[in-house]
Amino acid sequence: MEITCIYLRKILNSRGEETSEAVVFSDNGYGVGISPSGASISSKEAKIIDTDTGIKNFEKIKNNFIGEFSQEEFDNLLMKNINTIGANITTSLSFAFFNLEKYNFLGKLDEHIFPYPLGNVIGGGKHHGKTDIQEILILPANSKSVFEGIKTNFQIWKEIQEEYKNKFFGLNDEGALIMDFNNEDSLQIVKDISNKYKAKIGIDLAANELFDGTHYNYKNKKIDKEEQIDLVSRWIEDYKLYYVEDPFSENDFEGFEELTKRYKNKCLICGDDLIATQADRLDNNIINACIIKPNQVGTITGALKCIKRAKELNIVPVLSHRSGETCDTTISYLSLLTPIAKFGISQIRISKLNELIRLWDFFKDSKIAVL
Image 1 (spheres, rainbow, N blue to C red):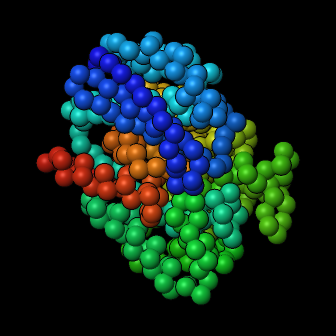
Image 2: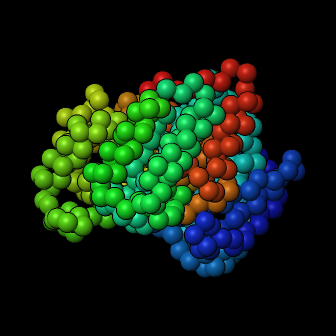
């Protein structure tokens, strides 16, 4: 692809924070990309820097990005400069390049298999809310289409809000319900209502945010690593959890390995902060699912490498949004390479979900993934 011009500007994300929007031009048109941002961030994530500084530093090297590039070549050049321009800038530029030729990406797909939408219904932790659990999630495993799955998640989200409206205090960063319930009561409520829709449930514990170096700190107790394994195991058993993300801190390899050993045949033990979309961090093979967030690694190419490596190791890749989001829909396209898309349910998240519906209709042979 021949790049003729690049433009960067500051815009705002769903939290009202500054972020980067890139526009990449060629003779055939242009592509736009916007970088998201996270609230709970792994120490292994690619470096981000102030948006103004990143844009200013990119302007000094912009001419190096004018000319003929493939996605991988463009991204490799971005990675050489990531420490001076930041992963927030590289992500927006990589997204923009991808969107310049996204229909080429669609044309190269061997099959048109779509992910199940994994939605956040009750929120807490660093995303704001009453529970220590950062996200209580639902997966509409009985759905036969993307539209049906998205609609099911909305129905469950609405039913919980309406049935417990006297305990409802608003929506958090991701559009999840803030409810006046503890961890166990919240899990039971989601389980009971999800069962009516034959949906599976899961959690993102974001345990990095609970861990102080020796113990996991809950609102009403402080527990050690062994007790954390027992607590999460009890939740898996009592609430029939299908998906458990970041149940331990990012450096607790033994905890991940033990939980995966116990439940690998009945539950997805998913690493987010543990992996930070770094393909080489999958080689320990101590999980059976992993989060893919392109801005953690800084480029589309890095995310694709992580998806490829996960599949080689029989680890389920889960394409994910961030808590600070925008209307950018790049990850909707990338999610066609994964069986699960964690895009949320409401508010600005709907842009990515609606794009999945459009893509489903774009193909004549669309089908939902097999879990």
